[in-house]
Amino acid sequence: MGILDRRWLWRAGAVLICALVIGGIAAQREQAVSEQSSACARFEAQAELRLDAVVGSGPRTVVIGDSWAAGLESRDIGRTWTDQLPGRVTVHAFAGSGFSRTASGCGEAFSYAARAASAPFDEAALVVIEGGLNDFDRPASEITVGFNAVIDQMIARGVEPEEIRVIGPARAPSRAGGAIRVDRLLSDLAERRDIAYVSVIDLELDYLDDQLHLTDAGHAMFGSVVQERLGVG
Figure 1 (cartoon, one colour):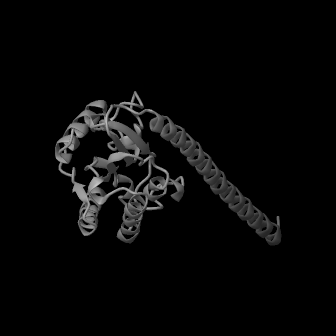
Figure 2 (cartoon, helix red, strand yellow):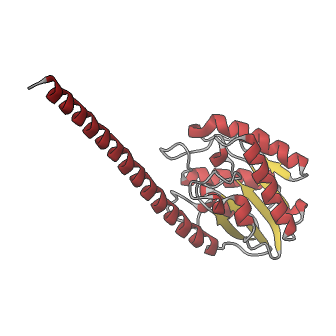
Figure 3 (tube, rainbow, N blue to C red):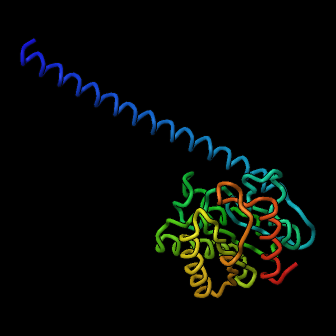
């Protein structure tokens, strides 16, 4: 085999390897997109079920939150920490969402501000915004814009500032560092808007193996502490 033949084979081999690598990357991306789409569909279906699972009686309490409020990984979708809130509790929650418009991989249509535009605030005596764990890696500027957007949306729809409570992130082991940063930022933002803020960053809760979501015992403890710190119930 001549030198030219060997060079041709080397080039052909290099082209083949590149094609295989590119094809593999494309397949991985396609799989990732498919998995994300499947997860979003599951989260959306769960959010609809959670919205319909109204519990309690009395004046309406509305919760906008993330997977902790939605009941992701809970054995009973209608049983989370929100059960310990007072009144007739309606939960408008979407797993993976947050204050930032890009917190959710499912798109900004599921951000807190977007959901505040459609949440059932009619006759609500208390509105609770819970979350921040999904904002753990978002820039402060984006969290700030999102926080102000959700508060503005609520006030525009007739919710009084004194009816709003913001519950920050707990120190979930898998996102502890980011949670601490977000807690401080949310506390500052709430103070600027004269909105009551409840910090739970100090809590030692019981987590599932993912070190992010709560066990049933974790939900029970979280709900009890939140109720106490809200001064309601």
